[in-house]
Amino acid sequence: MLDLTEDPHRRFNPLTGEWVLVSPHRTKRPWQGQMEKPARPAAVPHDPTCYLCPGNPRAGGHRNPGYTGTFVFDNDFAALLPASSRETIEDSPLLRARGETGICRVICFSPRHDLTLARLGQDALEGVVATWIGQTLELGARPDIGYVQLFENRGEMMGASNPHPHGQIWASSTLPNEIARELATQTEWFAAHRRTLLGDYLALELKRGERIVCSNEHFVTVVPFWAVWPFETMVIPRRALARMPELTPAECAALGDILLQTVTRYDNLFEVSFPYSMGFHQAPTDGAPHPEWHFHAHFYPPLLRSATVRKFMVGYELLGMPQRDITAEAAAARLRELPAVHYLDRE
Ligand code: H2U
Ligand code: ZN
Image (cartoon, rainbow, N blue to C red):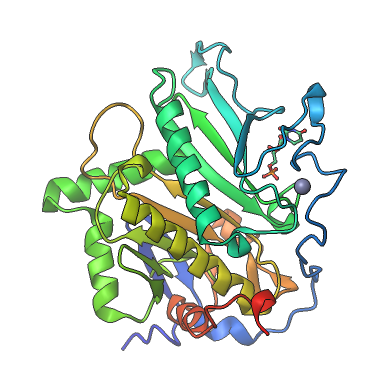
């Protein structure tokens, strides 16, 4: 009998169509490799050398206004440009290239240099949600934008360049790989069942409970059955909706709340500013309704067993397939049992 808590096995990710190798018996191996230095939140509310703080200069001669809520600007080092060539070059079927256009922006979540999403407070978080919605509407309405990716890189370990609370938007004319994959799998599921893939998945998770981290009236955070990163989670709305602007006011508030609950637990896990890449997956902004698409967020955090030992995607994972040691159920149980109050706000 296969024991998912002990025996090596594969788990299937129905959103990407890929498998992950799970090796639960390996969690006890010793670590003599690189140790990360634990991330501490910035100490000062305003840093005169920070290019995201209000009133400070940025690259390229721009200066930030004295903003008080969120602040969005065009990335001074944009990876995509709105007016570049969209030409196709296919001299050979083995040498194919296409020009890609788009718009990249930076969102400051708060004027406060020393805060993170976990400590912004509910009102400010709802302001961030409103900004994400506004940007999705504005960029998604453009005929040259087919998809709006909202994301946050947090912590040096994930490549964030600055501790000031901020996220990015990359809006592209074509669909990124992950979105193309999720579109295909969700379309296929909807065609077969007339319900969304993630709606059916969430119903299963709610029945079993073992991978649920936290929830509220409108959202649930789970460690997905097929998680690759040790403490990977997904935030899934109970109602199937395709894009962020379809959230009702009550759902917007609930999204702020579930993000707060989720990142607070992350920070409490090792009592550090927990690094991750997170982002929202919404339907393409092609004007179609996309009833198959179930809006959701992914959190991909790299930390493994302490604030100083991280997971690397190397070796077999690069050459074969992703692998994890701690099971999704064990990771969910640890996150679920953590206090809901941030460790820095505890007496
Ligand atoms: P990350 O911390 O996730 O790298 O995001 C910061 C972004 O800010 C990064 O994409 C941009 C970088 O290009 N940036 C500016 O647009 N202007 C600046 O003056 C510095 C950084
Ligand atoms: Zn700052």
